[in-house]
Amino acid sequence: MARHLASSGKKILILERGSFLPKEKENWDTKEVFTNGRYLTKEKWLDKDGNEFGPYTHYWVGGNTKVYGAALLRLRTSDFGEVQHYGGLSRAWPIDYKDLAPYYTKAEQLFSVHGQRGSDPCEPPEKEPYPFPPLVFEPKMKEIYEKIQALGYKPFPVPLGVRLGQDHHRPHPPNILSNFDGYPDPTGAKADAEVCGVLPALTHPNVDIQTESYVERLETDASGKKVTEVVVKSKGEETRYRGDLIVVACGAINSAALFLRSASDKHPNGLANSSDMVGRHYMSHQNGMVIAISKEKNPSQFQKFFALTDFYHKADDSERPLGTIQLMGKPDADFLESLAREHLPDVPAEKLWTHTVDFFITAEDLPDPNNRVSLTEDGRIQLTYRPNNMEAYERLRSKLTDMFDHIGCEKRHLEHHAYVGPKLGISGVSHQHGTMRFGSAPKTSVLDRDCKAHDLGNVFVTDASFFPSCGAVNPTLTIAANTLRVGDRLLELIK
Ligand SMILES: Cc1cc2nc3c(=O)[nH]c(=O)nc-3n(C[C@H](O)[C@H](O)[C@H](O)COP(=O)(O)OP(=O)(O)OC[C@H]3O[C@@H](n4cnc5c(N)ncnc54)[C@H](O)[C@@H]3O)c2cc1C
Image (cartoon, rainbow, N blue to C red; front, top):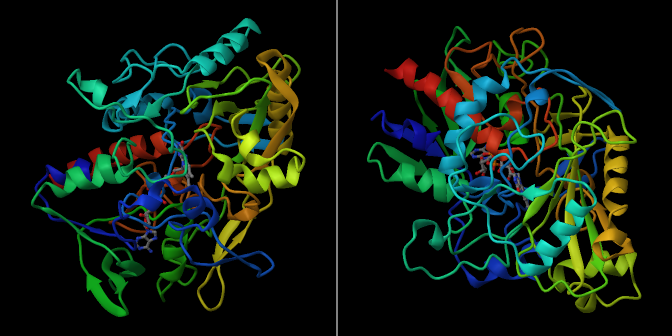
């Protein structure tokens, strides 16, 4: 958003609770990143029973994209309408795919997406090619890709946000993306929100950033309709900032928490919460790592080459949607150690990791008002969540594991339901969505179709809070595209 608005010449201040993530040798140290959680927040949240847990979330300039896997897929056209799933109903959006399509194209340019238009069997319509061609497959992955094709499926190059030297046809050192998903990237090859958004925005003299600045509350004028002050805690000191327009993008859980913390006489139930919808309908995808064991070695440095959407809408034995299968970055022995110890104690992790082919599967999570973010009396974040649509997840996993024998893998596999790092459970909040959904009716939604809070005149929310339903593709390209859409609306307002 800051980059998009920068050319307006208006004064823009980014308030960020984290710092810039240091470029240091630990960026690529698996034990430091995954076992010791060096870059994770040390904050603790509470589950519905009041038990503390460490959320798998990161507070840095660039947010969670500093460690994301940069798989940047568009939602499907059907995701904007109502869809019946095994676990219930996926809600329609107040906008259509065609409203977002031009912004998806811009977001793909902003994040240097490499892909092959037309290769994904259920991708939504788009004439523009991707900005860059797909990455060149390593031999083992090409072999598996072709074996999956021989089964009659249509795997396709996963659209990936990377900035490679070779993109610009000049002499360049090659980027080897061995440490990708989950790791910060000190080379800047990962197209994250710091590299692609914040740093270019800061080249404009009218844009500034204040790090280590935790936004505690938003305060309104006497009418309760306009936010006039942003109350920030920085190194123990309180500072108040004023701005004509406020854009909140703290991530879907923290944004909802900020609105709930900002309760006042005019907004007793939380800011902009006349609908009682702030914090509700939290969704996180039914995500799982499904790790196959190849009978032959898998020497790939980077294996995240393709995805499968053949089962997105249905399958030969499933009449309802299942979801998306994609490869992950290649985990190493340190990463696999505890999973292997639990599932396959007879195989040493250092032997296992040279043979794994690592998949990541995503089924849709459905909006449930009782899955929610709330605050305890002393203001701590509490997350109440009961997984749903697990039948889709389980059917999707079976479609994948049924292929293993045909692609040279053993029947047994490793699995972890939720994302990155063993035993995440509720702390797997990487794909958080839905806590302040947008819609046309102020009684049942928090934001209007431009993502402005219904109850306020000058506050917009542009992280994944606005999603009324979340489809079964990774969220970030949609967050970015919608931000650019809302950004155009803001440019009209400030003209
Ligand atoms: C390991 C991992 C892999 C992932 N892989 C993918 C992938 O391949 N593809 C994909 O699409 N998505 C992926 N994701 C998800 C992706 O990272 C998120 O969708 C994306 O980062 C959301 O962007 P956001 O800006 O809405 O929120 P965030 O990235 O969470 O950013 C929120 C920002 O707000 C700041 N903040 C929070 N609260 C406050 C406050 N009170 N005051 C001030 N600042 C505050 C935070 O520090 C942060 O900088 C992955 C996530 C993880 C963790």
